[in-house]
Amino acid sequence: MKRAYHDILLPDGTLQQGPVVVETDEGGHFLSWHFLEGEEPFTEWHGGTFVITR
Image 1: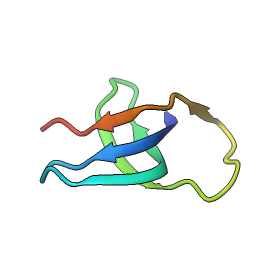
Image 2: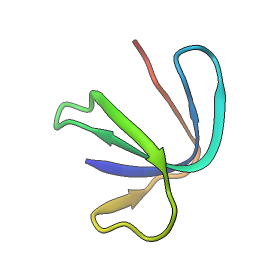
Image 3: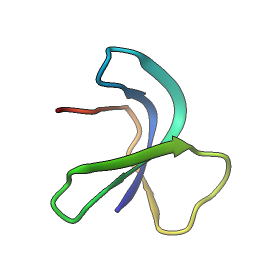
Image 4: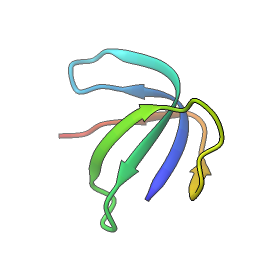
């Protein structure tokens, strides 16, 4: 699943300003992220800050 957020908080405490796209599996577990550079198909906008939990 792909969702877009304003920012992402990385595990080391770094706040990366976006917008960013976060990809998760069906269970909601973090897989990857990248900067949003335009409209992306099948990406849902959530806004706010995504926090990567360990």
